[in-house]
View: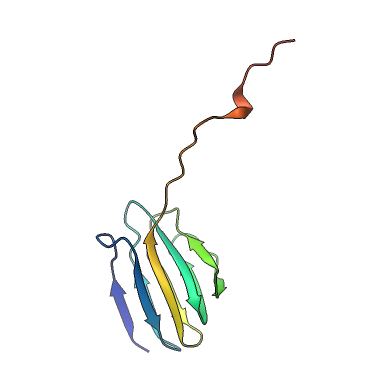
Length: 100
């Protein structure tokens, strides 16, 4: 079983083929990563998270903590690796003052 490492910090989005029983390590960096399963089935876990996940077609894992993401192909799979999209809060409706 081989281990392949790649870092997509300088690439907006990267599509990778993951073959059955192959393991990939993705470095998250400061911005985090989003892993989208484009086909097949993958096992995914992240250093510091402690939760194993199974992703199939259309499933998305969003890394919000630092730590390597380990991905294993449970069958021949395709994934897309993108920087985590930041969400900006424009208006917080829960903190409004109510007057009676």
